[in-house]
Image (spheres, rainbow, N blue to C red):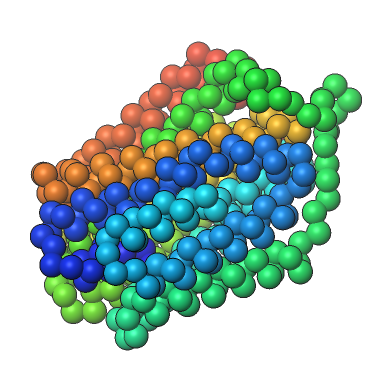
Length: 382
């Protein structure tokens, strides 16, 4: 709800130049993920040991308080510090992935995680349009307060609606607990798993490079009229494509292989990102964002399902925590990179760089798959 107008909110905090707003949009958007990068493996390890329901509740409450206070800031630095604090609790969706992953059979993990992705993306689809509409009509500060109430409601739903079943191992040879050294050793000795996790970093860099400046790009194409609303539509177009295909990609990957589908999706995302550098009106951008959402929509559930396959049950929370940390590191680098590139070379440079990055990731995973074919064998339901 707040992403479409975050840069606009920064702009109304003072009399700033366009370059200042673009650069600080990147930093304020990305700074949340600095603390998230640090805390994700910690939360994952705690979840492996004590369960994940309580962590989900803590995450929702922390997010609600952070967002509530953002509606009262008077300076850019106050907003920056609150986004930094918010990162401690930013991990609700990854932790829910870990919760569902550990209670899902390996052979259907892609489809089930795709269903989860559908749920989260429905929020991503409705949120930007709703947030943009509310911001246009009643202001940015009130929108932050409404978002806070929504997130707090999530904590109540988790508390009342979830009963977590503890499953410690799936086979007689599996251990019921692993130390951090053993977890890292497992990741490093499985090359395809390691590359999939590294690619998580670069996918997030590519995907988030345009996020904090998208509303500015929309303004450049469409003009100032109803800017927050049209920014919301541009954000939501990717969410719609994601919503329509996430579960289908997950089901297909269960049958055809997670790595094969990941490679295809990386190439597809890189190809559809490039033409956005040449758009001349808002609706061309919306169509390309929709196609991007179709491709990006499968990457998260398919990637998580592969980790579900390759990591023993008792370490999955921590492995997913490290993967989430790499994603959050990408969320730090991406917005900052996008802001700096657009400020120095214009909006088109962001699309050129991100397209190249995604296609390069596709080639990297393809080469790794060919060098280590045994690492991509999976037990699937046909």
